[in-house]
Structures are given as C-alpha cells and as structure tokens.
Image (tube, rainbow, N blue to C red; front, side):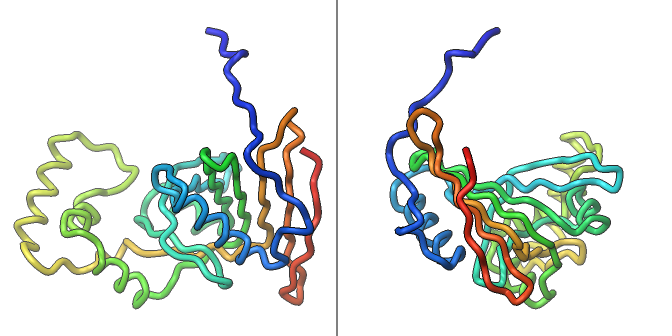
Length: 210
C-alpha cells in the first residue's frame, strides 16, 4: 500500500531567534501551555527512547509529570524494559509532538532516579486503581490476561483502602544537555532551534537546517 500522497501543510506558526526565549525551559513552558490550552489529547504525552547495552533502541509513550530547570520527570516500573535499559545506559531521548500547533520538542539527557520521598508523594496522588495496577503488573514480562486480572483482584483485596508504593516503582528525572524546538513551516523549510548546555550550565542556541 502506497501512502506517498499522505501529507499535511505546515503553515500555522514560525519560530524566529528574535522571539524565542534564551532559556529553553521557559520556551518549553510556553509551548507546553499553548498545547494544553489550544486542544489536543494529553499534551504531556511524550515518546521515551532508551537504548540497551547491545545498542538496540526501544521507544514507548509515557506521560510527563513535572518539569523545572532541574529536568523532566516521569514515573514507571523500575523492572520494566526501559528501567533495565536505563540502569545500564542512563541516557534517553524525550520527544513531544503537538500536532495542533505543528510543533515538536526533542530533549536529550542523562537520567537519574528521583528520591523515594518524591516518588511516594506522587504515587499517593494516583487513583486507587492505578495504585493497584502498579502492584499487579510485572511490566514487560510475558503474562496471560487471566493471570493479570487475577493478580489485580489479589492486590485489590490485600489493599482495599491505603495502597503503599511498590519498591520497584518510582520516578526518573531527565537532566537535559540538548533541547531542540521544531516548528513546521511551508515547503518543508521547518524552523529548528537547538539549545546545547555548556559545562558552566549556560545554554548556547543554534539554528539547524531542516
């Protein structure tokens, strides 16, 4: 099946050096607010790409749960495939695609686990069913649907009210060394502005060819 003619024109916005914030976190915050306010499903959805010890990449969509000038935070099962890969190769790439704004943001950085206190604080804010699911799912392991449902019922019975955080579940923070902002433009002459972190913590900005 050929899909060669399946394409969109990008002409909503532009991205100029005279308008972009010199602080990439401020620029991300601005674009994130645009995505949140202008519609679109789950603006905090991002593709998280990791690489195994053998150099094989894998990717999945996760939800961003916080960001600051320290980095970008998401939560997961530490025993999952991405958890194992990050333990051996603590670098990843985050990619946001905001279709309504015709924008992408790509973030490359080093990954660290956040504190148990921070992970527990977020875990306690989750819906009850999601907490039970964190216990029931041995993420990335082969399982039947019946076994998964049985494990969910087992933990739902064990924890009818308060649910403790599983020891294998928690957060990561991605500490970026490069952040790229991409704005779709006509004739595929897209705007690409990248920020690279210097050793002293400052950021330098470059325009890249599309």
